[in-house]
Length: 515
Ligand SMILES: Cc1cc2nc3c(=O)[nH]c(=O)nc-3n(C[C@H](O)[C@H](O)[C@H](O)COP(=O)(O)OP(=O)(O)OC[C@H]3O[C@@H](n4cnc5c(N)ncnc54)[C@H](O)[C@@H]3O)c2cc1C
Image (cartoon, rainbow, N blue to C red; front, side):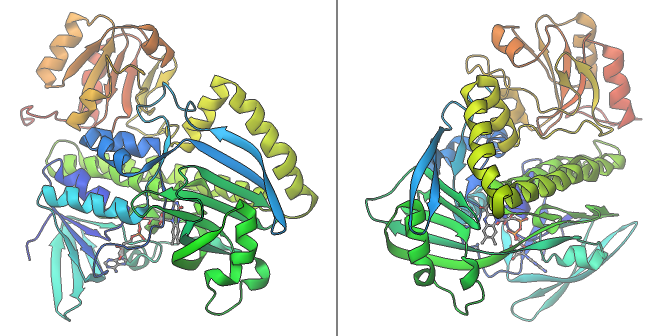
């Protein structure tokens, strides 16, 4: 078997995205999975706008959107198994308008999503090694040695510079590193089912919340089915071999549906945990290996993909001698804070929404509709909700890589989209590399510095749209390969740019090796 500088353990959405981030930067990885083939369960259903923006950088976001279903409306229902009614209908259509090229949430099941990523990797000559299980590994300052057992019984000793644990909640990488995974398990049992309903395929999203009730219904385009997620009624949660028929009478009235065919039914327990560390030496934890939470917010898989995008370009830079190895120190602080806050917010929201007694009822019947009703009436409110759910709000203010400020945009923020297809400031991000942006007139000194540093400089007209996006006329924004701003500066300071570059010993593509 060929040796590669990066061993990726696990071929779920996190591992596949990490391999993609590396191969698109010409870094080979070895991607192993103990599974015998691609996943066949449609687990995570929602692809958030920020993930689509990353896929836009690879040039295949439109293909993904084409294969999913844009969820346009959410119907919120109220009531129990004796009958329910719609109390609120929320249009997603305009929620993110102007904020992202993908102003919506996309329903796209995880199994279809994984197969899509596998195809994209194959196009780049990167194959998953199925039936290959990491048994153990050891590391020192020179590298990593891992024992991989194939389902044929053969054991291989593999060497690599780095090992990335994308191996899910029961991560062998995390356990070998003896990194703690504190948190807990929700007492409720969840079910998941892919079903056909009478009346045909529905493209909308349905939700029913109540005391101990959580029922969600999503469209699954590839199968023409609906995906149901919910809480198993507590009196049934200990029943052996629970099947859809056991809960049919409870579930159908909640969404006012009649299920005509059940394709898949499964139950699972949900945990909320964050690893104490995301990195030990040459080993990294990515995705569910580092953090797991309630599926209620549709955030888990997207957060793992965000981890992979963050780590991928950094490992590529260090291996290609384009940055100091200290660049890798920024992975954990940039990603662990969001994972921790996500676990605590989804925890609180989940507990409040399905909670019991007066407090739960007050949250569902008064607080949630009031907040949603008032907030979504105003553009700013709709945008605030969209930014949070879509993961556009994720930023890295405390990272050593994040420096400076210019008006409303700070080092560590996601580069705002100018909302303008005619002058699309996300288009240059497809280079997957560093770049400088100026919205207005470019100074000669900056032009010279960028040329000498081999840093591509993109000048855009300063328009009402760029202003609305929070960008400042004639300011300098140095943008990282993952579309986050590293350096923001009111003035086009060539010296600030050079200091930043020297701090991390950055080399932009085609720039000469330092002496
Ligand atoms: C029933 C269910 C429903 C869910 N619904 C949602 C949802 O609606 N929204 C949402 O955001 N999230 C949801 N999730 C969570 C979501 O599926 C995960 O967040 C996502 O799969 C994480 O991706 P990952 O790549 O980090 O890990 P995983 O998808 O768990 O992938 C881990 C990979 O590692 C491999 N592996 C494990 N150990 C080894 C080893 N020792 N050697 C080699 N390979 C190994 C596995 O075979 C697998 O390929 C759901 C999860 C479940 C179980």
